[in-house]
Length: 107
Image (cartoon, rainbow, N blue to C red; front, top):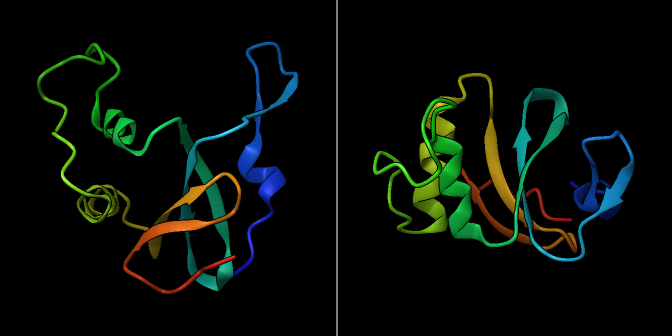
């Protein structure tokens, strides 16, 4: 499945203005019927571990699991999402980094 790189790069600032990331990674959630949702952005893959922090916790809370690998990260994220078929990490240039389970949604 081809994912539009403009979507991977785009975000809205707090004032609602459309902006673009120059580098980094995005989570992409795949559902049935070839539907997908663009998720969180991070400038490095290890920072996706902050997805496990709770709103009332600080980002430096010791309850955030340590980064082990992209596969481990994606498996943990997939456990939290019941309706998701697979989760992938994409470079914002459209390159697939890793996916769990691997269904080859490459661009």
